[in-house]
Image (cartoon, rainbow, N blue to C red):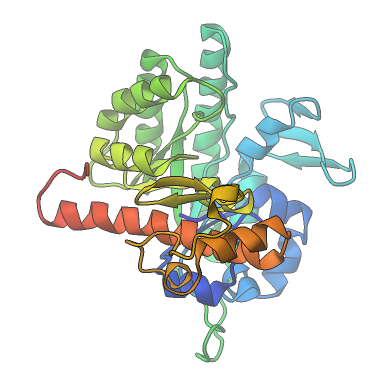
Length: 348
């Protein structure tokens, strides 16, 4: 899932995302809660209508963003009081309010509100955090069941780019497994989350500074604990190589800011390896960025031109670089799906 934190994938308009074959986007409740405001989006018909995106949207509950505000937040059983990173205003998110916000945004998949455990964390700290997330998960489920009918599905003309989600009316709630880097806590969290009952299950609390090998070990230990007949979502990963590895382990869904963030910094993914386009070696290179890529960027523009755009700080650099990186990531995932359909190993 490409990350569209503020109801936009930076540098790329929605029609290009559709052309690239993006099936689902991720947006963030915390950021939309602060600006333009959940009620504003609801009054405009929900997130799909607001951003003219007819395909599914998943919203992160905001727990990870609140976690990152370690100096500006106070956690209690009720939820989290925090200061806006924009203007310092006092705000609050808890299981009920975060779920209500996501329902009002009209996301197709909404995430339970959890506490993302920091790394490193002592075992007792990880346990307390996991247990708090489990209690919050139950409250999210109860609120969702009582209020899911309040999603702002609207009937609009079927004109292009002015339609509600293709899955309108099928809003789902996913639970999140926590437990830090401790396998037994992950097992307990998975059991308690499954007992509550969700439409899908996510592995959260990773990619927060732990070594990548440790991430893989936690994922490998947690995936078998999750139901095979429900989507399994690994949050916040990864490199192209990693997403293939995680798909091989049984992960169905992933999101990551890497392809878009790296693109804005001139780091491009290709079949020949990573390219730092600002390097002088590409100044006179009239070849395509990736000769094996079928995206419109590679079909039309040379490495020399892409380097020129980046070196001169032209905004088009971000547009083209991001479109290519997304095309590459989506191509990797298409390859994974094709190999699954063929009954082959997903590893390349």
